[in-house]
Image (cartoon, rainbow over all chains, first blue to last red; front, side):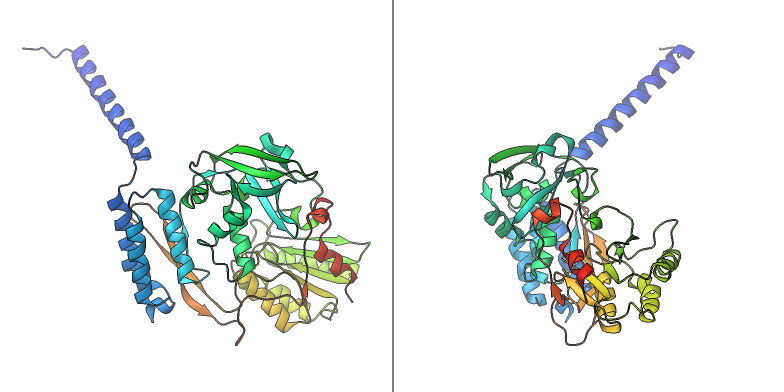
Length: 62
Length: 354
């Protein structure tokens, strides 16, 4: 059985904080450079197709 | 474009997006706006890279008028191509993404986007957004290629670039509205760059200052320069228009309004009001925007690419029966030789107008 001393608790806390920090940085870095998939572009196009004719005041609404 | 054609165009875009990237997608959306044909319906991608160079178009061609500090030696050089595509080919490709029925609208768009690496790659003029090779000709006829690296930024107009010395008066200040009086020619020059209130200098205060100068100096001509005004709130200028109607300057040959290829939206409304409600003479080039146009833009954001789609919600009939852009009463052409010597052909005309 492991005894949790003050030093142990602090060590675990630091490890946990470091892991969270690394994961956060990794996630934000990957997110920044993330390439969109073909499905993402097609979804955007579909969203445009559905949304634009509802608002625009040109022949698209006539 | 009717709804059926719109749906067909979307389907065609879908079929072309086989291995899409941001650049291709953005180019395709620009092409869609050309097909819709409404000059206020547009797309706003989030651009993060820009080529640190600006160009102006003159009768002799397109010339470099501003660069970063690494490339000041190519100021005044003529642009002949980009990445081995001739300027004719480049122009032709840009016509796919910018409406070209009105040459002024096209030229304004071309000069705005020609330093955008995403647009250049989307049109397959270049293969990378990191650097661009420009084909240039020096004033003494020497041809060179210059590779320029992209820098962080949204558009070249906002970059602190090195500009040509001796630029004309109209280019020398960047406030929304300002004036300069030339006692030699007796011309009071009023530059109205943006239909918007300037921070810490309300238009009403500026207007009072302007008319104080008119009362004191009794200028021979008043020039209102709307050439670089892309719009905003058309009502800002109303106090000026109301007072100039009562002034001795409201007579033919004394009140000159300059318009050009960047005059757009609310600035066109102001030019029309001055043309129809005063004795102003319109001088310059046709405007980029149409007299009667769709406007009052609203928008939405696409969920993945975050591109904003701006669309028109109102039809502005500013001059019943008028078709196309606002045209000048007196057409002016601009030469690069005069530009480099600080000479503004429109102001030269205004100084001599009778």
